[in-house]
Length: 351
Ligand code: ASP
Image 1 (cartoon, rainbow, N blue to C red):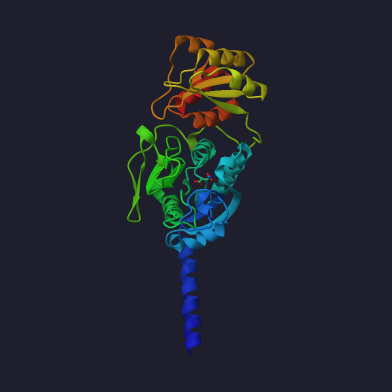
Image 2 (cartoon, helix red, strand yellow):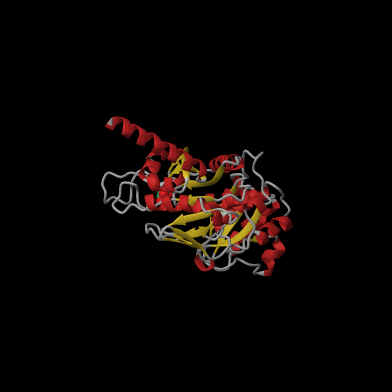
């Protein structure tokens, strides 16, 4: 009898879960690796651990609370430390997002990702995902095995944001440490601290607190469903290198990039994207060979603007408030459409 009642209760519970699962927003979690799936030998080890060790099912089972507000299922795309992310990886991820988001049953996507290059992947998806549905990237700064691991709460929050109708049409989002940022403006600002992702002077979009999402702002720059870029038929992105300027900078790395087949170079200049005269000579020769050159800045805040008149006359473009690694993403995508410097500068002015 007791067994029978237990069975009945069990059946009723699974029936009600099945009903609620049908009505809850369906969120796909695409796992790529990173510290959020990292394991270390001890609970106090927070550096030198193995990133991307745990599979997506383990991460999902560690946070059963997310099933209260979303019907979640996982998919393992990669198991890498994100310093090993590649152009091919980005294309694969963007195509998978577009494929999943076409399905009317899917409400949104969460992507677990290493924090090192998370901002680049986020910005690439921000320009290539063709949907208003939420796409939220999330990582962790402490491996899953650490005391006070930040991954589980970050994942819960990411699913909460992805399942929230307020997140629709806001472009690709990043949730870490209870803060919601947008893909365009966010950058990793601290090598080891959990409060690492910040939008700098352009700020965050909102917060997650007490189980609620609070949005305050939106970017004015077009993204996702309003983007000009379509990667569906693209299998390879043009090579674009970043050259970091410094005292005594010469043209050796510029020439090396050209020799390696770069179609574009982002100069991570000093100050307002300044380049040394020796770098400039190399960049001008690169442009004569058809390479597109964009000045960005190694300084964290502020736009890189038109500056020394000669640089404009030479045809060197400028990135506005995109940091070098994001300027690289935009230049790669721009070069899939045109080599016309005027048109490419328009993309930088627009995005
Ligand atoms: N190296 C790791 C990665 O980017 C760091 C992290 O996830 O925080 O995958």
